[in-house]
Image: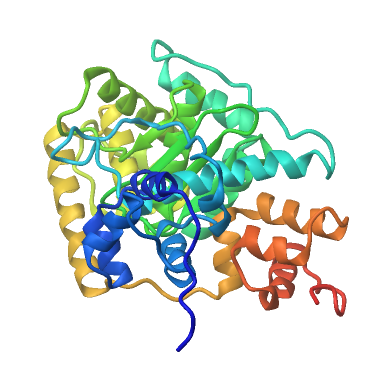
Length: 399
């Protein structure tokens, strides 16, 4: 019989790892297939896990194995402000998956800051600033200017994914990191933002539609401009703190104004040709949505803002659109499969991926670290490089 090797770790590290991850003892015990009492014993220092069990714990908690051998628990990331609906609805509850995505975003941002010191110059600075007293329409225009987005380019950018990528590139070129959460449900979070400088970060949910992610990206950017980063669902209904609700409504308005500028929308032949207010056919709403690369809800909200439609018409359409989305989700619950190398780039963003590869080429990091940072196996690196740079890795470069 193989010898049972105990892990000589401190129980307070086990308690810290579980609590900061958001798991209850019974949940972890079920994953490890052990009685809850045994995990309680480990946390009371009345017993120790084996090395095999500790590795399983590290995987469950999504923590490196070495963290359990530290002399004391390390400081965890600062909690993000929660702009979502009040407890009992969404806010105040963070699943282990959401906690992990927050830690991962912080870790990726810190890694970019570290790697930037050895590759190239200092990262760009996004310096735009505003308050809730500012005009959302004016701020939307200022954001477009800061990002270098032109109307002529926007309306020919392609389909929803191309539009999402174009806005993402604009944010990253201006000094805002954009990551995608891959493990958390859209019902829990649409996006969040980390307002630390330099290089603040925006995180959108990859399980959302491309148009939904584009809107959330600009919504979170508005939070960064307000210096009020946090967790968001982008909804305006439900109970929440009045100041949080005001901030969410403001950021939604700014996102809409950025994506669909007033002067361009009202100049559209489709808009000028209708009386005010009017009831819009679905085809016309969809035409504008495709033109600007946004959802039908964004178009309706912009039309409502400028009295092109009535509140009653808006409410009826929004309810029907939501019913359609629910039906589609039930009929087609799973999204298409993406190759690992494309998922890696999509999750971290082209800026992050290029920085990691550049650091590797200049011998600042190892191939194994590239694999860890991009969360992909080494055999996928040639395809990652080909997608980013249009050429293959040299033979043996990832050996």
